[in-house]
Amino acid sequence: MGQITAEMVKELRQATGSGIMDCKKVLAEADGDMEKAIDLLRKKGLAKAAKRAGRSTSEGIVYSYIHTGGKLGVLVEINCESDFVAKTDDFIEFAKNIAMHIAAANPAGLTRDDVDASLVEREKEIYKAQMLEEGKPENMIDKIVEGKVEKFYKDVCLMSQQYIKDPQKSIDDLLQETIGKIGENIQIKRFARFQLGE
Amino acid sequence: MGQITAEMVKELRQATGSGIMDCKKVLAEADGDMEKAIDLLRKKGLAKAAKRAGRSTSEGIVYSYIHTGGKLGVLVEINCESDFVAKTDDFIEFAKNIAMHIAAANPAGLTRDDVDASLVEREKEIYKAQMLEEGKPENMIDKIVEGKVEKFYKDVCLMSQQYIKDPQKSIDDLLQETIGKIGENIQIKRFARFQLGE
Image (cartoon, rainbow over all chains, first blue to last red; front, side, top):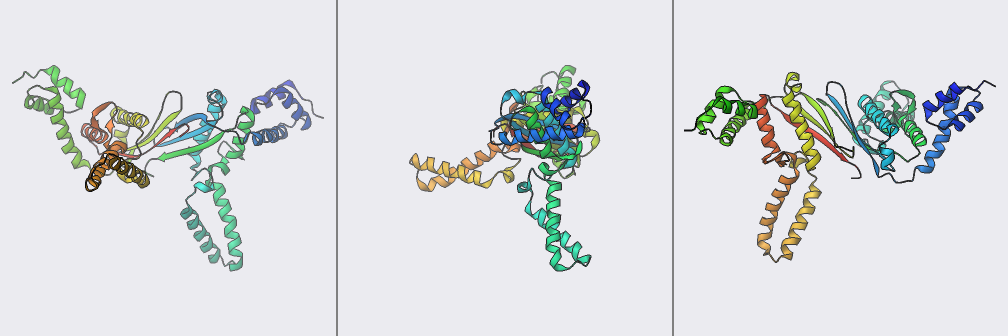
């Protein structure tokens, strides 16, 4: 079994915001493997988050990010349960990361419900035409197109997008992690993204 | 005729951004009355603005205003003709004033085209019910309701709202003035306003 040093516990605490005892425990479980330990904590964080998912989020902040030069700006509303948490650095940091992600990744909506149906129809038509062009048998095309549409939604919806600063995670993963770390239910309620000349 | 001093010309120039000769001329025309001189310049500004109205506005800035406490935020896109003007203090000041006005006055849209028709229908129903309640003759009601709807649009559309910092002007007046002062066509393109718990 790998040696669990105080340095490793400290590093894990800083990375995850979890308690000393939890960090020691998962590091032992993971044989000192930092990545594995983070995954274990994340799983525990997810368990915590699920319990919190029903709690009402009427507090929070409205946060803006203007990209250098002022040609691109984002406004987000992020909700939490208490005004106390809304004022913490961790929560504001989360809001900032979400705003910067939106600036960079340009999501079409929060979830698939927010994506314009005509946009999806257009994508479907393009996929179908591509398949026919490639000579794929017609009876396979619908299934392939369905898969492509799933991929399309994953790429354009904020919650399922790969997080720009850490593509191993989705934005939903980041949200669940933050809920676990902060200990309150959190919701990304809405966003606006204005780019000059769009 | 009142005496036109260099001091007055300077004051008028600072207030309006107009040239020395224009300021001298309108001050003479207005018999040294500063308010009247500003009105005269505004009228000339309007004439200038009308000439500029057709020019394309593909430059500009995205500007945000977050109200103290972070519970209310506004994002606006303001367009102008050149990137040079987009970087001037006067233009940025205009964007800031518009963002703060939107935060305070909570417009429903830019112009009446942006106002949800069902919102207007609801207002109409309320007006009609009020008139009937007051015992107004039915044949007058439609005319009165029409007037009330006009007033409603004026109050909820950004361009026709009274400017918070100077209720004598509408936002459109402020826009035309700024066009006259800056010398480029300017357009308030879009805005988003998020208030917590809305």
